[in-house]
Length: 580
Image 1 (cartoon, rainbow, N blue to C red):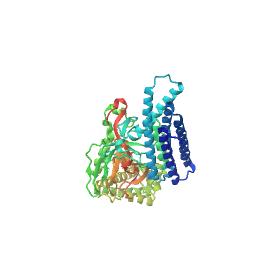
Image 2 (spheres, one colour):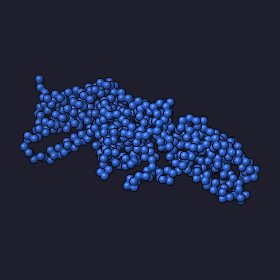
Image 3 (cartoon, rainbow, N blue to C red):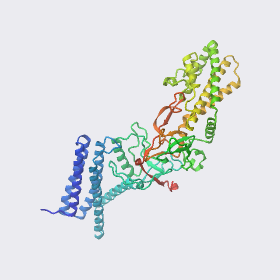
Image 4 (spheres, rainbow, N blue to C red):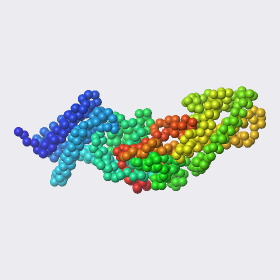
């Protein structure tokens, strides 16, 4: 009976392990459809193994050993990719691995065993080459040597990126000025406990996550499917070995560029509830406790215009300037300090004035009013009206101007008139709750006051205009109303969701091993505060008496297992190299 040498014996063990993996897979899923790819690949690899078993046992040469070592490296990697493909087919949920644990154990043993073989053979090959006298290499030998070196480098880079460190590319300005677009941060993965894809095996984390840490993670807003996970695995492979230049998973199913992976800063910790009011972050450890202002330096960059000019020259979009900051501050102070009873009384008084003006127009000037509006506006019958979305007139802030023209043009419609004023004179029932909702209620009330002033000033001006008695003071009042409405729309539509966040989670605290993260550039960062799609949101909780605006707010947390690593260094550009 023929004896096998040590090379053949080790390869026989590898082949048996491959066979066991394939058998265990066949128990879980019959090899039909795309699943046949795994069976085909593993069969080809095992056939290759048998070939090398025979060759190494019969006429082992130094050159054959080099070829075999390269083959073992390639076949191991391809076998693992095939394993991931099969795992993606039998795993119905991206969050729950369904491969048998015994299968994963055998796979891990196979990878480690093959890695051991590659290591000892590489040392043996180097020792042989040192003993040999220098000989002229043939062209084929040169090609093989270069290909072998390149392949080894690719696998080496891949392993380093998966388990030790990885270089990322910054795609946006959400972390400005810490990171500019196209900066290359270095991410430490080993301390976070890297995981072998499509298995349960993970190295235990070596470092706890703290507030203020800059971390990288998969964007949890995108739905994870087994197919998307396999595509992500292939994408990461190409992304790693091309040093961030190739990304096949760049766009989502709708053709939009994906914000994935993300680089953000940890703000909320497990066991905390977070809220943001006018840029200030608060936290508490129980829904029943008092909120405390977060005093830690978490690099909340809101006033970008104050940065040095050298940094501003690198900024593509300045989200706020000094004039806008002054406007926001004035509105913040006015809203926080307003007298709710006084404003409510002013709105009721405006309604009485508007009723008298309405009676005048219905009796004497209805047709001139409608003709004047029709001649000056081409959106009398606009589809963008609050009532077309089952809201009251003026309730949806994005439809404000169209609502006003429609409301005044149809002044004879008593039902429309009463609905509009009923909304404007109603006060939020959440006004006496926590600070966030009190301030939100105040904002809603000031909105209603400005709208009621606008209606009265519009009707008063047009009444005097038709009788040729309009005054400069009336024009000035209208101009002030227009300015306030423009500022309010900007205050709400452009900035509110970036400056405010209701208590989150709403009824509890952040769960164990979960974290809340945000970008440093608060006004230009779509982070875990926001979802991918907007939705109409009542301004104060679910109070239908408050105005509505399109909001992307949909806060969520990231699980600790989803955090891939810590950003520890900025590698490029060379002029900004250093610790972020």
